[in-house]
Amino acid sequence: MEIAVVGGGIVGGSVAWQLASRHAGNVTIYEQAVIAAGASGRTGALLRRHYTNEPEARLAQLGWEVFRNWDERVGGSCGYVPWPVVVTVATKGDYASNVDLLHRNIAMQNRLGIDARVISAGELQELEPHAFVDDIDVAAYEPESGYVDSIQATSSMIEAAQRAGVTVQEGVEVLGIVESGGRVTGIETGDGTKSADIVVCAAGPWSTQLMATAGVEVPVSTIRVQIIIAQRPFELAHPHAVYLDTVAGIFTRPWAPGRSLVGVAGGDQHDEVDPKTANLFNDRDYPARAISAIAKRIPGMKNARYLHGHAGLYDMSPDAHPIIGGTGIEGLYLAAGFSGAGFKKAPAVGITLAELIMDGEARSADLAPFALDRFATDAWKTPWSETEYRFDSDFGHGL
Image (cartoon, rainbow, N blue to C red; front, side, top):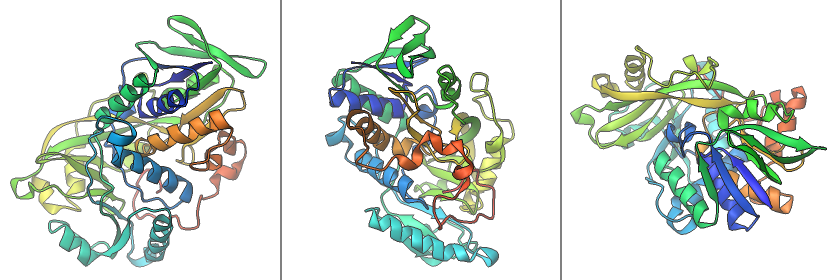
């Protein structure tokens, strides 16, 4: 059996590795540039497991278990750093109901095996002495969720896939998907037509255009999101927690000794771009905006120094949840629309999609909520849980 996986990022690598490990057939990864050239090489690779819905929390937990045990599960290293993750939501005034929702979501996560708890603003102050906490009452705290090195993890996953027999074709653009009689038969590439019994599209922002060649409509838009790397002031040399901070409107993590990755939520995260022509460098005013934003949570960061930065591309679905599974064409599968939160889920996506392809059903986690056909009606507009938070700021997407 010939299997084509389109996309050389962490998701494509994970799917290819799982299929090859199960001896599914001859698996080939097709990447138009180089491994980790897209979103996988530009993400902060935060492994937060805080979700308000169970389907994504399960994927995040399953993925984290692989990252934490990478050496024995995958081989090599993904650069995993066990580190505290703090998630904030508005709790003051009209947003006081979020306190109860936070407790309920933590209870759900605990039930799934996620090590998380609710901490008070005072407890956060003790854990993070340099943090400003007067704008919150409670926060979610994950002691060891941490983060990984995105390029190291992606490369290590691809190497594991190669050890399992996967062929990697870099610099080969997939131009179209060939189907006949409702069944996939191959792909069109810059090097000609390649036969394939199974095609898995994990091409991120390029998935919409590619799937359209097979007559499959994928409602994914491309959003440009910037980050910077800032040098922390000397008095903040000790690394801070990872923050997914909807109150301050930032996401941040330690990047390297004395340095932090900082991203500003909302704003330009609503601006759709063409993935082929998007500017992948920082806007002129973005570094100052990012430093000002992180200073809302860590005031001393107002004296941070901009070092460098870049922009990455989110493949954004209408409901900000992933699209994983079949497509209505036999043998054609999709893993896209991760909306900036796919890296942490990638090992789980590989496991479950391989189960779906090989066994006809995903057993490790239910993929039914992620089906593409949810967009055939307005059903996708229904919240995935009764515990979704109300934000007092524009964060770009929910949790």
